[in-house]
Image (cartoon, rainbow, N blue to C red; front, top):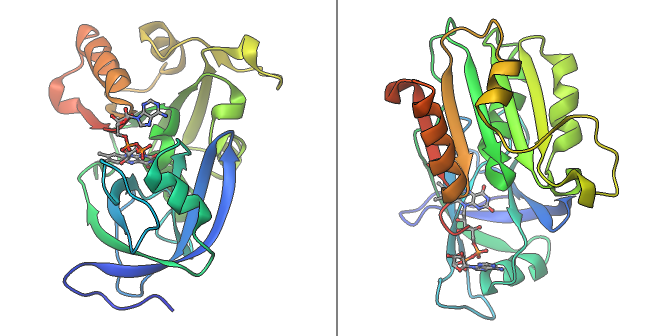
Length: 246
Ligand SMILES: Cc1cc2nc3c(=O)[nH]c(=O)nc-3n(C[C@H](O)[C@H](O)[C@H](O)COP(=O)(O)OP(=O)(O)OC[C@H]3O[C@@H](n4cnc5c(N)ncnc54)[C@H](O)[C@@H]3O)c2cc1C
């Protein structure tokens, strides 16, 4: 059982760890009974008594990648060689961490007459996975188009699942794009190159007045915001979240 909320947040137990792309791991935790979140929100995880630590400290922020209807809380991260991530990988199943949250306002707008266009770079997919799995399970009529950019299919966490969700939700479209498909050993029939204005125009025919959501490394988010502004998208219709630390 996960333990109760106290003033420092929740103590949550690791239940599963699995690779979801090359060098990218999903971590599942028991969901505390009192814990409620909206798809798109994030939490802070703090290591309890780690065997090593570094200048960046024992806490990292992660978007919740699971949907509220799923039984566990799941986050996913690139496995870089930092003390925090080494510790996360060697923690035994059943070990506990401190979790604070949920935080953040990057949640799907309520007005279902306006489509949502999600632009994800790499591990920036995590909040969008929560949102699109939630929409499918809820049978939401909300129109959603997800653009997902990675270097190669091997690097794209949840790729097959995000593609397959189109069969469960007629209002959802998935557009994957690979920037270095030539370096892949896996066949790729989808789009290639970076997310840009031409790619959006090609796939957003009949998608009227959407609200755009951009998540990923800071450089990618800044670049896509500029691209959207150059395309005369109103500031109020662009929501962003930068994964500081990448
Ligand atoms: C709102 C929000 C949501 C987030 N959600 C997620 C999420 O869902 N998944 C996720 O993975 N991350 C997420 N992040 C980022 C996360 O909090 C960490 O910052 C990130 O995972 C990097 O942690 P780290 O331990 O690898 O590097 P840190 O130790 O935090 O790195 C500190 C600095 O060192 C540099 N650095 C470290 N290792 C390397 C390396 N191998 N190569 C180059 N530079 C390096 C980094 O550029 C960084 O500036 C989120 C951040 C925010 C603000």
